[in-house]
Image 1 (cartoon, chains in turn blue, orange):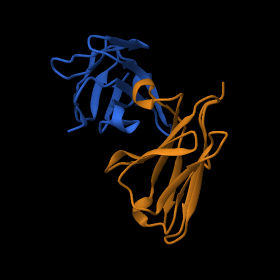
Image 2 (cartoon, rainbow over the protein chains, first blue to last red; image 1 turned 180 degrees about the horizontal axis):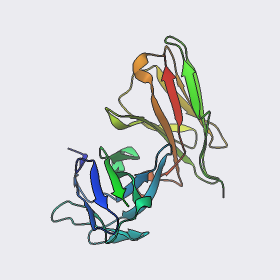
Image 3 (cartoon, chains in turn purple, yellow; image 1 turned 120 degrees about the vertical axis):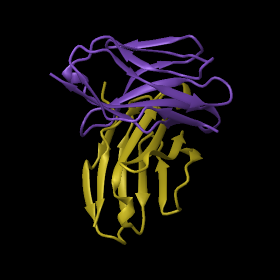
Image 4 (spheres, rainbow over the protein chains, first blue to last red; image 1 turned 90 degrees about the vertical axis):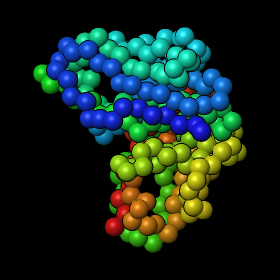
Length: 112
Length: 114
């Protein structure tokens, strides 16, 4: 099928902890992959993307590597801050349908 | 440059009424997509327009419709509102192909049906 699966939340971490949010996808071919972030009361913002295998997307200290062998695109950050508290969505492009398919979202809370 | 603008931000409607939501994409973006976001179903794709043509449509009933104007601005309409239509409706624009370039989202319209 064509889907995106990401780890269930909520995830609660202390400030400066290491973050990993797992994401796997199913697809035929090699779709573009994305991470979006949604802060309370707002729309989604593109955090990073990768368009081909082995690409690494990075932004604001967050990174994710396109792994075609494991069909994964895990989000990582070395040291989280309280301001990183938000909902994170993994997503993949769906080329035959001009759209993006989103995972269910992972709520992240960072304790001071 | 200005982002994606959605109006209104909040709406309260009564069951059975109809509603029209508006979206102004980023200048130069020709693709506009609409999503419905609910706690139970997450983000669900409604439809996508490119140069005034609907290129793709999600699995929503015919009560949900949309259109795009020559200036790329888009509207979506929901007729005969049901309680289950209460949701955050998000508009997203893209230069051409969202599946590779990604979207820029608006802040959404929060629709409450009572």
